[in-house]
Length: 329
Ligand SMILES: *Cc1c(COP(=O)(O)O)cnc(C)c1O
Image (cartoon, rainbow, N blue to C red):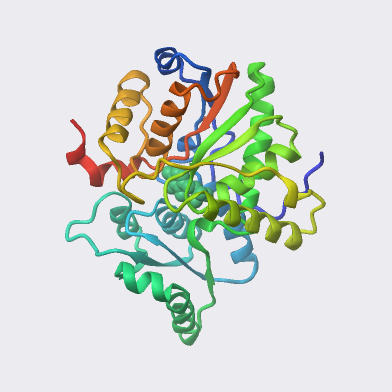
């Protein structure tokens, strides 16, 4: 199908490689796991957010904005990618972060500071109760300074951001051809739903013949079924698309959130070490490592047993290991 993409900035290093994880796959004893290396989408801008921001920032700049405001946890990969890309593009960036600023900045938060983002931190309670007001007040504050600010939602997961992973699905179509494989499943960590929405639409548009599974690292299945569907409906309406998004299957593998968002049990840290030492691939405990640990457990429970090949999208997150140093052996 011909897909008519909207305006886009070239910010990510694409296409990312698709590589088999042969030693790990053999040890697990299930399908051959292929990694879509979206952790290689950039150096400091590593991960899945840069794919969405190619479209989001194109829209903001096209609308004449000189400032972007976005939000997330203190160690948000999305905020770090936005801060760095803002510096690259000459945009002012204001981050609204959930949590208490570390005395000695760590990981993503350190990089946010290094590239000069303006940062306001709020307690969890304040953030949850007032996020929309805080974002709008911040936008108003910049308006009074004669600046034109653009608000990017959590994770850049909205109708615009969906395009990022539709574009990734187009890459996967080519990857499957190049490697002569026909994976039946594409699995990834889901956190704000945009990656899942894009891959779900993209798998259909590019006829990948693969089911897309989001492994939720927060919230629950019901939340993501609704969020992903809503992003897809907004995308369809906004871009006048004909794809029947109301009947696309949305698959969530729930049950692996563990103690909570950005909290992981020891299994996750052990799995991260195992993969790092066997394959030289680094996952993080908040997203990719938590989801990969879940995938290993699902395969051991014989899910995906009928598949010769499956894809796990490495959505990045390497800077997220540093705040958890003491949890590794
Ligand atoms: C944000 C993020 C995700 C989740 O992607 P969403 O599109 O927000 O669901 C997964 N992995 C990493 C490393 C992330 O930073």
